[in-house]
Image (cartoon, rainbow, N blue to C red; front, top):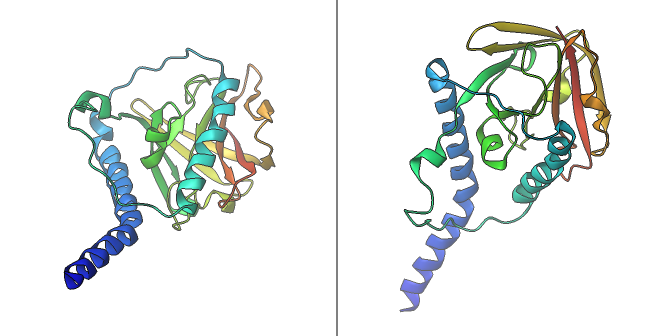
Length: 219
């Protein structure tokens, strides 16, 4: 009996240790699937809430992701089959974002939610559409694993190029400013009525974030 209990404890311990890696593998797989589905994607942009509210809600998303990487992770439990329908699970990319300097190529989905940002970057749907006059904002997590999502965004400098491919067109933006702001500073979403701006938003620092790293770019 004691020997059997020892085996069970060893198996449980291995599951706890391996789950973070398994979770990361799943998120990477979802990211790859979004990229693979990109050519067949269709989308419909909406703007139902204020951009400021979405920006402020990013604080909870960034903090939740940071807390998830800090705390010991228990082995996953299987959700009831009827809890989520296949339709509800579908995430459709609206674009891809590329930054050659940091070897970044990621899908962009509509709406900043925890589910969307697990495997992709998210266009704040209340901001300007990508490639249009105004300020289009894209948010993403910074993970501890090097190269995941916006992890290397801190290496971006003024003059670097950001390319966003939508279904219809390719847009190239040039970085003109890099800043670190407080989570309450919504001025980063400000824009005039003549420039085509792109704002990338992520948490800073990576561990226990207190601020936001903002990449400002202009077409």
